[in-house]
Length: 189
Image (cartoon, rainbow, N blue to C red; front, side, top):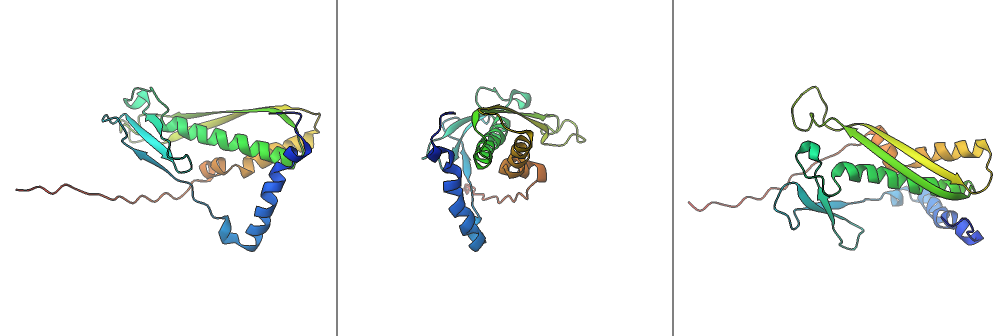
């Protein structure tokens, strides 16, 4: 991050978010967003490889692999990596935006997320083991460019976690609805 940011750059978050905050106070329904991604078979016929396409990625697809703990080759990012990356990206950007609101100049920010899962659950080896990640941890390294008091640093940490959409979704859980759309070939007997 450029520590010699101009005054305009240091106010970028406020300039972009203040009109949104004002609008959402008047029109709460306008604050609802929908992010999407799709997974497709892509160019691989084996079930351990596919492609994903985030909605706002100009149609570009990313390769997806499966973790070796469930039989995959672990030769491309897997869903757990993407989950960890999603949390890392969200906490990273949220921390940077909150820092601007609090007028804390950051020289550097790095977020590393680890996610731990007992694969026996998804492989149906032990019914007492839940399917899913049992633990996630975030490590955040901040380099503060100018001396900042402890109170503001604590506010930065608390607000960053409180406003991180992905973190709060994972901590609180979310209702997930699945709709299956099935087409079958008709046999000609």
